[in-house]
Length: 284
Image (cartoon, rainbow, N blue to C red; front, side, top):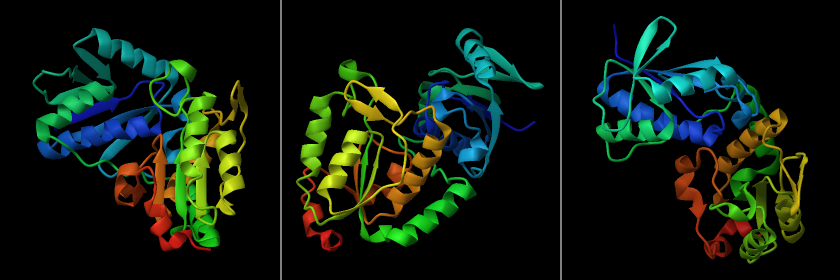
């Protein structure tokens, strides 16, 4: 019987979190010769989407969709037992410091990171290839708006309000500081904007004469404005289209992060974004 590694992430984790975990798992598995299976929770963290609705198959990874109830049950087992049984096979629950067994179960980032470090001090991120329907839409949009000649601007605003640790948060001070840093870029810059905050989108669209963005609904009303509802399936599909579009842009400003960001790290500009003024793409 071959070595097999089963993994799963917390129910609330989004697609970026899940692929970070999978990247660490693949680092270990490829180095030590394990086959990889992943339990994909069809939970609110991914707007209740099945894996194949969002992504193409990942080479070398078998993905099984599981319900929120099933994933919660597995989480309970992983926290309390030394072994979990999935299907007809038992898996040893791996915890940092353990010696790997032939059949392993890895729960979320802590375990996956510890496994990866057994193989290498750092590892490549798995690039998430979106589902064919999403890619078709992206190709048409990229061609229509010549995104390869645009500056991509990604702004993800964190939930959690004033108590959140990551910025920008959904408080006006953070939103205004983010906007101030971006509107220093000349107004004639050709841009593609991807954000979950209506205030950010409207403000940037009013500053940049030639700004493009995918249509979306800001259905979640909060004290500081309206935001994309993360549990909306259509919003999830739009976000993945935005990811594909961002990766096609000539340069990218990345505030808050996005899926596949490491695969385009050479395109990302750092604040104060003075390089944007020197790029030919900013000229109309």
